[in-house]
Image (cartoon, rainbow over all chains, first blue to last red; front, side):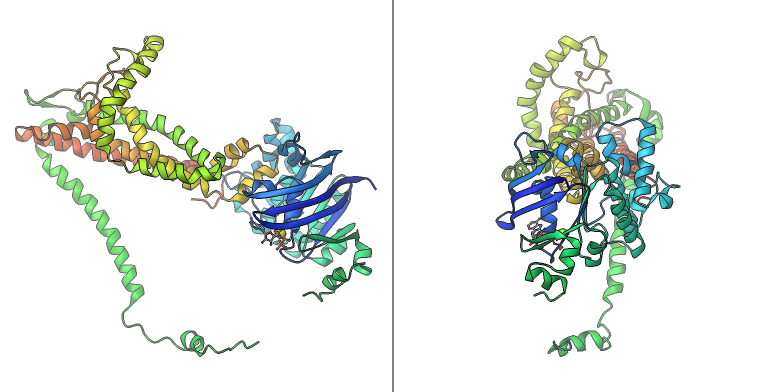
Length: 252
Length: 327
Ligand SMILES: Nc1ncnc2c1ncn2[C@@H]1O[C@H](COP(=O)(O)OP(=O)(O)OP(=O)(O)O)[C@@H](O)[C@H]1O
Ligand SMILES: [Mg+2]
């Protein structure tokens, strides 16, 4: 399989807290990579480093390299804005823009990139909302506020918003943690369907979810990548004792 | 684990029936706060009535004409308030037009752009500026600011745009423009301090949402931060407007104190608060005094109306798309 992205000795800090301690990881093109690990081990920090969102927080630091499209994302020449257009992100907590309508939320990324053509916008909004399994619920009230939706609907709105600009990679930080089982399975179906065209990195606390959808799974512990392998292999016969302990719930 | 634990105290305080309170706190707060709120309304109405009674003489003599007449001639006993109304409103508009964009810009700089170590000291200085007594602004205004406006603002603008009525006439310094600009300086600190707090409270997750879509910092501010904060910022501007409308000492020292309506911002003008402060002590005769008090009544109503208008503006702007939960 082709490589989409590779991190090299990736380290990250929050102030003086050393959070990521040298991650070497390959993310394959058109695949789903699940990231699992105990709370606070640095999963969110890791995905935030991939699209240069980590540096948005004051007092943070990143070292190491992230290779993407033959370039280091952290190269001096690279504008983080370009990176974030190609590497989209869905946050753990839904964050629709409250002053925008449902339609404008989905179209926000396109408009930022200068797309004004109504026809293209309409099409993209509908397609994105359909993919995020939200279209049927909102098609009659696209001009309502994004805040008028339930928590789970808001999250799907945010997914649609991320999809609309058609990024190469989508980073999802526990996108389904606020969703009911039906929406969750919609999202899982979406992710599986998308992987033909997009590379997906998904952080999850739900082992079954990882087992169901992920091609490869990475296990993080205390800022280190313990093991990264084909999902079947990880769940059946992990190489590392710590992975096995975590997967069988025999941890700490 | 010992769930029930040592804390018999908890058991007693929470699970047993509470003993009746010695005095009814809930009811006390409910009625107490209600009484205070009511008191404010009573105070307001009482003030309006008291001022209206004091200005009865001129109310009866001039009636509605008091609002439309431009004659202010104590010798002849003719009193019309229009020049003062005009001066107050226009100088305040000039002040807001200048102060609002600058304040919002400074607030954005402080919250989004300035390096961390610079934010606290600058913020502190701004709060200090807000606390300077207005008479000091007036003194500085008269001796430093007015000559500055004359030499560096009125003369250059007059040269280029002198044909335009708004900027015509001799550059004398004292006048509407100086008053408006001085007011702007006085209200910038308040608006900035409030806007900074409001912008600083925009959730990070909102900003990150914009950045993750590939917004630049500027686009993030323009498309997400400012819309999110807009009703709060408008509120801050209105508070500044309130202060500009009522400001007396500084305005009277630089506005020129002439009861005329001129199209030019360079011309001397007058304001409601200024005329009251200036002429109150020398007001001979009941009608004169009564007229001054009526000017006060009008100032009160103008402030009230402009605030109501601004509230309406906030409400219509903040409504946002249908079904939103934000007030
Ligand atoms: N803004 C911050 N400032 C300081 N420390 C932070 C900040 N955000 C996270 N951390 C620290 O970084 C570490 C890793 O956090 P991170 O959010 O990456 O964990 P996570 O693996 O995503 O956990 P979870 O599964 O609970 O989401 C944690 O120990 C946390 O305390
Ligand atoms: Mg996390």
